[in-house]
Length: 316
Picture 1 (cartoon, helix red, strand yellow):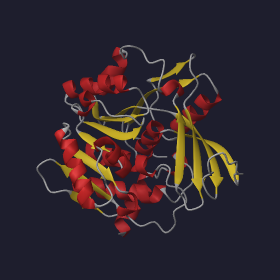
Picture 2 (cartoon, one colour):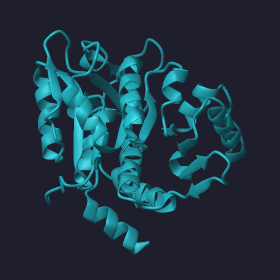
Picture 3 (cartoon, helix red, strand yellow):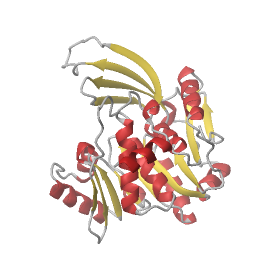
């Protein structure tokens, strides 16, 4: 892997680690039913780890602030992040909680269902982040957050970033609970998928018109920009007072696993944005990265490198 340029303003992530226990199945089990999996394996993942490795493999200097437990899963994730070029100077190991993990039920059509156990992602955080960690955030080009860590930590980080003039992107995935208004008011870009947008706003999101109305509710809640991931229908960036920018999906010749596609999209968009690309270019770059992601099984193993993304964009 080529060396990342540490002279650039870094991508800062305060985020989650999960060991993903993948089981391949033909269908989801019914209530009270036991079924057999075709195969199973444990891989490194978690929204935060996925974001971080995506940034690292896209050759952007990426610092990860997060926690793992003193266990085999923690070692697995640390090795995966290091292999992805992520800078781990600010990763913390805790003894009072296990590393976060998740059960990923992967169906034969590439769709997945996930159950998360928070572990060290959701507990044992200090009441106040260390000054060294805060200094990393103040010097970032952009900060990327998600909801597999406590809202109190996200709010603390977003406040520091806002004071320093650092843009904040919040991936809405993670805990199935309302996002505090205090956090929404500190965020520059909120990035939900359709179901997360519906849950957040209480509005239907089956059509683009419905999505547009749901996004207006986000604007009313204090978010100026909303980046909606629409799966096979592409994506759209809504900026208050402006016409939405729509990005069609970049077709993949085969879809093996959609597990990390949304995380890849959000992180690739963040990298493109901090590199100074236009919003349209950011959407296109992210769509290409996500297209490559779904062609490989596993979340972190599927994160594409920068050359493949650029080659795909050049071929379109």
